Length: 113
Image (cartoon, rainbow, N blue to C red; front, side):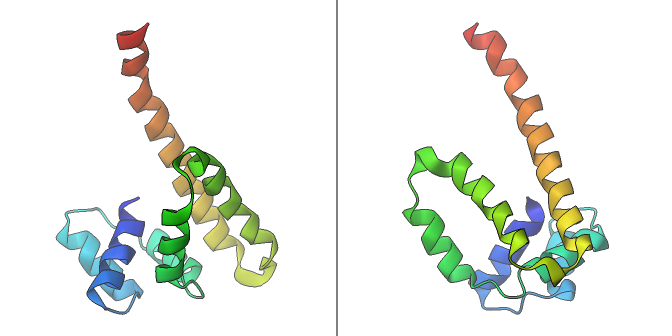
């Protein structure tokens, strides 16, 4: 998730979203940077209008948040020539996020029975 946040920070600052800038932001935040993830992010954001994506996400109802996240994966069928490395990196990031979410929710079950 920190990789996406670094791209959002760069976008907000008006800086170019490239491997060098993303790496600099992540290192400044103390993140152990994986260059393959940086490359995958840059490739995935190459043709994305971030401002439009933010507006679209803000307009989506909160209840559809899970559905909207799943809909993003359907874009892969549109551009099959983008490369498997970016797809694999994105899938790995999603799996890590899911694992983090699952681990974080274990304590809540004990609190609420």
